[in-house]
Image (cartoon, rainbow, N blue to C red; front, side, top):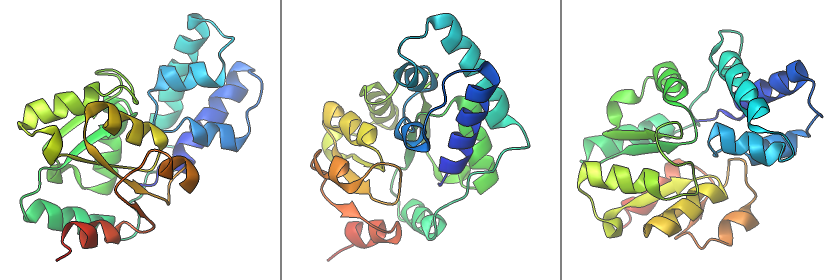
Length: 202
């Protein structure tokens, strides 16, 4: 789903509210995919944990408020997910969002019933640490050799590499193609519908 605008807007609002030094949109986009505390520390490494906690609290308020832009599915995403689910694939979410944030996004996009497992950054280690994938694979009783991590950031692909799983990059997200290619995913796709074509080829 495309939550870039929602995340960047929420981060910008908190930065202004707390009187922190402004950050360019590119820097805000760059931390998408990380857990919230990790994202804040990367944006403001000189700030202490008190500021990190205040920032996180206000971010949750802005992100979950009804005034923010909502997450929307990329074109074709619903059809691909529905088909994979119907064909027996075990689908999971490993996200930098909080549990409340993910619940809201799944509710907004009406796709929660397709997923067999989810892990959020406030429940375990943030990406690129592999713990999210380890927990999902254990829950679903799936080996690393049978797992494919699909992501649009280098944090997704780094997590997959550390977990020993294959990765597939999609190029319509927040990290540039060169950054994704450097982590050697099995492919870099420009459209979500190509995921189905790749899995069903032959």
